[in-house]
Length: 111
Length: 114
Image 1 (cartoon, one colour):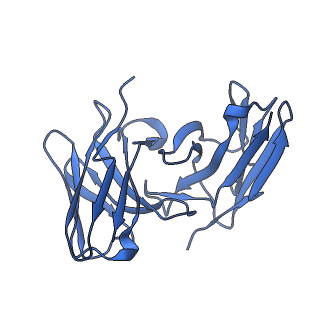
Image 2: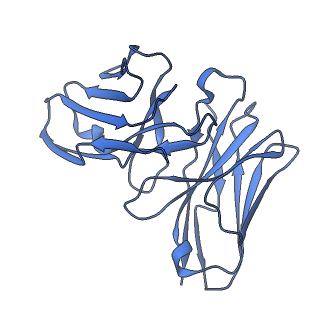
């Protein structure tokens, strides 16, 4: 079945540093979504991508839909302590709207 | 802006008991999705409804059932609870005709089965 491989699994960085994470799949996706989840809370939608090659920003966050449609990248610039959380990539499964999630990237920011 | 509302936020049940989780989607959203997230895991799709009809089914146990009502809220009914059902349960909603069917998640219900 479809799977999303997300890396890195975790990152511990200094405040002010830039962060990059990615998601890959063996299957083609038509939509890529990036969510952030804080402990005990629901995932919050950060960025949605719909077209191969698309580059979209949301404040300090920038995400790209890979040209092959099998990958996506999320960059966070000038990280701050409130960026702490788990970042998930997600995409709709099997031409339906149910989402499959990557395994998540846990981000810790050292003040 | 209004968000997805879930109730209760926390629920403690004993094995073999039943539980009902409720979800109130964002106003004008017509599609509701249920996900289960175990400790340290990513959310796993359970079931979804569009316009009160089941639209997709994932790895939902037969002991679980769900429905969407005329006001678009949804309830997930869980019977014969097992210890392994302890997890965070999220509801998400979307508007079917929005591009990409972006799903917005509620804060979740933490179910603990003892």
